[in-house]
Image (cartoon, rainbow, N blue to C red; front, side):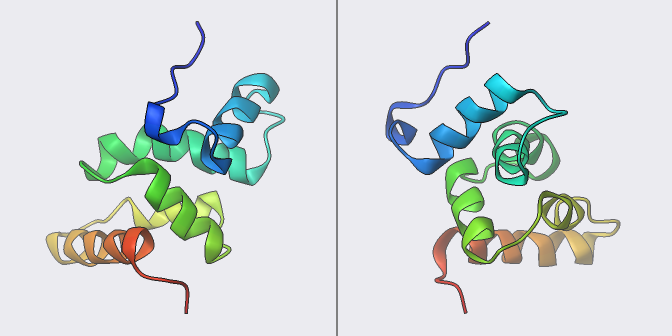
Length: 97
């Protein structure tokens, strides 16, 4: 089944990473491609309503790995969840430091 790219994401590096992931498969995908797939699916399940492309772009600009982003998205307590939500907001809207 072919992936549907949202109209707002078409022509972006994020869409290219998703397409690359679909072509390469999980075992052969680059970290950027893995992160795009993580943002498109798992991020929504783990953390709720965040913009997958915005989080991906923010994480990429900060040179985060998929593992670092995944760890951020698996808080163990309510305080960690609130801190993770704040960090994801920063990834989406704040320029890299």
